[in-house]
Length: 322
Image 1 (cartoon, rainbow, N blue to C red):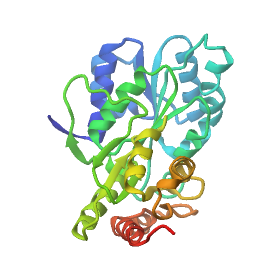
Image 2 (tube, rainbow, N blue to C red):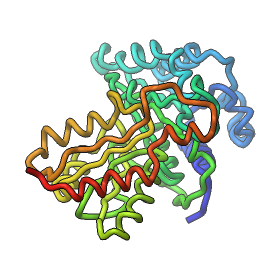
Image 3 (cartoon, one colour):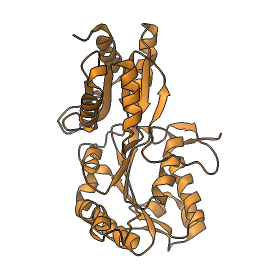
Image 4 (cartoon, rainbow, N blue to C red):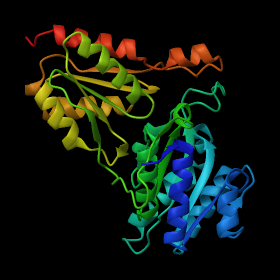
């Protein structure tokens, strides 16, 4: 399997899907500038730069999708999605239902998110939970290049709008990517490490923190199972419940604000459907309810790190249900 960065894996998926389906087109903020290979192969009609006008970009994509095309749009940084909320949430997410299924809206929205570049609060804000809460939208966030390629191909072929979040801190991290037709189904989590003592659930860059924590825990005789959600909606409830039913302990980790985050939904899911199997309280680790600093060290302090994850999991394993 060839090695490539997450950024290049996104490019590979775009090339393959544009070759596969002439209805796929790419436009957005700087896409033609950043991806010359796409312009050279597919031309300026299918790969276009746009003004910095997120609402117009998203609205154009909704119209294109409704007329039979399959647009992929790049809005750069996740906080800029604020300017496209009406088009993505109120139109793309609802019009298929409102039309009684007569129309589909197959569009993918790319946006970078998370710590890693020190770009400041107006460019760094993990907003994925907003869109998970919005009916009609699907949401994914890969933690490695292979999943980035496979999930993007699946998202482009889906007949529903998909929000595709790219973790800035992982964008240029290399990893092995299967060549050719590699598709990761939406809604399917990955068990990256098996264990029987505690379940660590995460997505994006904090998956790697969980894997590092699992190594630390193993040295203490604690076997941690690590689940990478990959897809936030649809959510792989079966994978989460199967693991927690076996381990009896759960730590949910994400960079986004802990308050009303994805971790809260997972904690509620487990409390409702696997409470009797829990041996200790559920623990959520997330970012604080505060804007992100531009300072790189402060930005990193914002993110749950491997040491904190290992400590939380070890503490759980020392507790017994009463």
